[in-house]
Image (cartoon, rainbow, N blue to C red; front, side, top):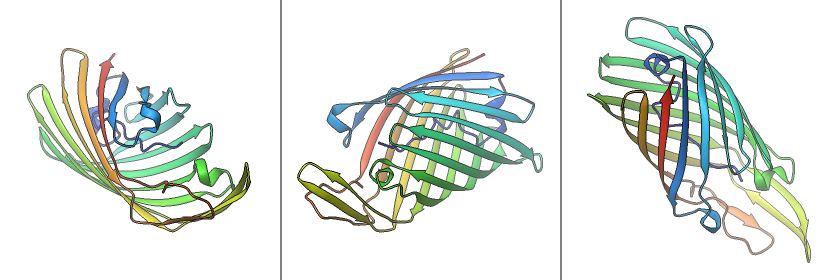
Length: 239
């Protein structure tokens, strides 16, 4: 099923300083989640590659069948303000996604920045995919980053407002139908990282809640929206 994915903020398109190197590759592993299916934890890997002074290509995948590719471009508005436009296409065995984001980064000091942005996401996900029904969502993005020597602490908040969906499919014993109200999600992500030569190990904590909507069904089934707390360890390398 579609997972709530967020690149480590040291890799995301939120600051021109992120792309000081030509290529950055990473691998990360979920190590704890209170909503992981059957105790399955995702391993993810990817790369960000500079294609020009201000353009970057992103490619990512995981061991659960997710694959995505995106492109971001930086526009300098002033010495301290940068606008980044980013587009991404993702695909799973049971769904697909298109993501568009616009983010403004304000470099307050050499080691402290603030950013805010807007995102639009159109996706077809596990249960919705079975009825060929897509979900449209609007995202509000807020965050900050702080560096302290070789250490960095980054935070991002994402509020997502999603429309509802209706559908149905046949299972053993008869038909099954569901109806999902429009709902909102709130995601908080905190990343602690340190720089060791060209290596950057990091620890990421993600919390989100998606309990602000109701799922009604014609058969007994647990709610597909739930809260989760996820711990992830990762490592990136700069070429």
